[in-house]
Image 1 (tube, rainbow, N blue to C red):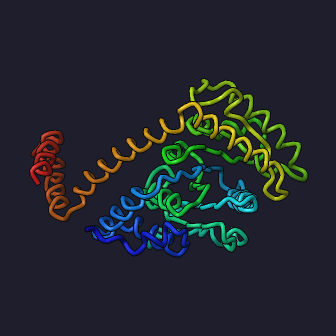
Image 2 (image 1 turned 90 degrees about the vertical axis):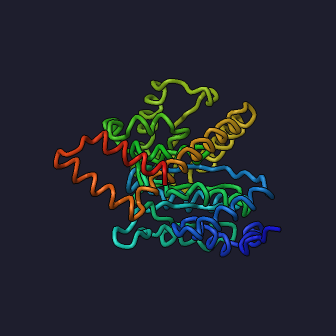
Image 3 (image 1 turned 180 degrees about the vertical axis):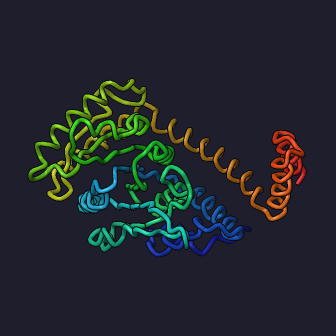
Length: 327
């Protein structure tokens, strides 16, 4: 009989410290930790079918993502929801650790017993999503959280990978003139379910309304997606500072999620995401083979041969792949 991992029951019970330790485990690159993490995830998956609402959140630097998440999170916990925040921060080039530390910028939410905040280093992974964020989301679901907010590093086309681990994708933008539309990549606009123009307060309120109109017009020019009801995607004005527009935004998120569940898109999307990450794990495993000392030495030797003209690049690559196939 297989022994349960010591973290299994505490995570299921919603213990936040156990959840933090479990996420540390899945983020580890040590082979023994990877084996233990896989066993823990499989064990939790076997006993729970819980599905949280996964909301991907991205936005331009300085737009107020942390302030929005704290205010939005406190609103949700005030309604009885349990909220987990996975904040993928830029990484330190020296230590590989998270350097912004979103916890320090969400002081009130950090102290809320219904909330859990975890900064994770993005490392070198494209898309602003830490490689193991998907597994961290699964752990949060097993721990009984109702909503998981996945905050990514910044805005850009590579950020679209967050759509592969979320049910809804929210793009947070600041009030600006119409010319600023040129600064937002088309790719990220095409996957956004909701555009929230933050800082719609004080002197910026009228500017925010104009910005919402600009983005609403831009969204109407995009090709309609089959997994959207009429009216989506849409743009709304919010103010995290004044807590205005957040109830409306949450209502729209719930409405879209309910429609997708009722029309079969929710399960189909999650199945596609699972297949995507299976393929990514296979690719990562193949690339990991290139990082072994003997493989690196052989690649360096072949690279010298190619650089000197003694061998063709394609022939050397074929030989290296044959060597890996026989390993």
